[in-house]
Structures are given as C-alpha cells and as structure tokens.
Image (cartoon, rainbow, N blue to C red):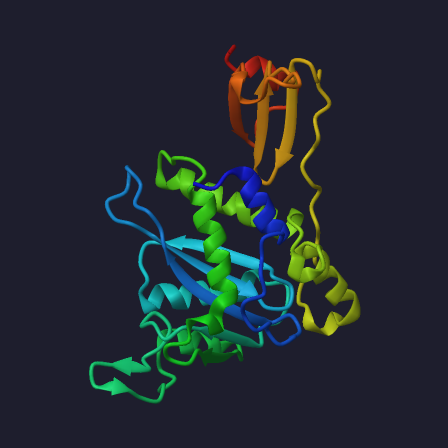
Length: 277
C-alpha cells in the first residue's frame, strides 16, 4: 500500500521515467476517455464503474461513477463531459470496448457504422470520435495513468459505503485540477494552464475558467500539535517528540497519528474534536 508521501512524489512527477513516447501537442479539446472498475462497497448490491475523461493539453479531468458500462451510460457520460468542459471538445479518443463502439463483433472486426450511442452523442456536438489501434492500449495511456493514481487513492484507506468512496474520488479530482502541479505541465496545475490557454486562445472556450483558493495552512503549537496539509488529507501528529541523536529506531514513536479529510473544522475546534491520545 503506498504512503501519502509516495503519492505526493508521484503527483509531482519525481518518480516518472519517460519510458513511453510523448503525446503530440494539441490545443484544449482533445479528450481521452476510459472506464475503470471500482471495488464493491458493503452497502452495494453490485460493483460500479468510474468513467474518466482527461484533456490532453491541460490535463483537466472530469469523472463520474455509474452503475454499468453499457453504451447508454457511456453516451450519457459523453453528454455530461460536453456540458462540464469549459472548452470546445474537438476530438475524443477511446478504446474498442462495447461501451464506445461496435467495431468488434463475434464475426470479427468491421468498420464502425456510426450508429453506436456513443458515436451519436459525439456527432450531436460535432465531436470526432477516434479509436485506438487494436492491441495498443498505450495509445490511450494518458487516461490509463490517471486511473493508476485513482488506484493509489483507493488504497490509502477503507471505505464504509459507495457514497464515501464516490465523494473521495470527487474531492481528489477537484484537488488534482486546482491544486496539484503536474510535471508534464511544467509544474503547474491543470486549471492554471487552462487559464493561460484562455488568455491566448479565447475562441476555444465556452466558459470562464476559475481557479479556487487552495487549502489553508494551520498555525498551531509546534510542541503539541503539528499539521501538514497534503492533497485531500490533513495529517495530524499529536505529542510526537523529536528523536534524539543516536537513538534511531530504538526509540518508539509516541502518540497517535490521525488522518482527517480536508473538511475537518479549523483550530481550535479541530483539536477539541479529536480524541485524546
């Protein structure tokens, strides 16, 4: 299970190695779309699916949790992406799954007819739908790598319900778009890059791009309570003394470690809400 520090390094791009060919530069409006299976929660009768769309130029992400991976759900998701995206979507790239195309049947490969529900959703908004080459999933690697980050987020803790999992994914996506710098974007956030594009090419956009204020940094007594804000978590160390030189691993860390979501109340209500160590 990855630690929060490891997730931070991954998001900053410190561990990334360019083992793949870089994507060709595009203007905002080239979307990669994929579907990821989600673990079934205790209160769910069946597992659900995560639909993910990411823009090639800005790395802006939009996602939704849906009950199936049917063509109708894919069609509905495409309509939602078109509504939520602040720019004009020109092209969409997907794999060859039945959710997106009728390219492959039991009889073998055939030319897409254009009558698939997902194709029709694209045609309604004047969007070109492209398919990856069979056996070349790396062509859609941008969204696949984001799905890998989602897997890391899911592994950080246990979830009590489907709603708990869904809200965590939405919070992470919001933070990813607004507050997590990306190495591929020269250590800028997707929203910051999008704002630059809007100034340079306003004709590409249909809505004003707005960046939201980042997380607060709490100033507390460093001897008793130290807080570090990271992603969608606040890491709280209570009564954790500094290690004396020479003791190393022999000294056991005192106190307890709490992980609270970012919507925890601010200090002093935050500290009073925590249970005593």
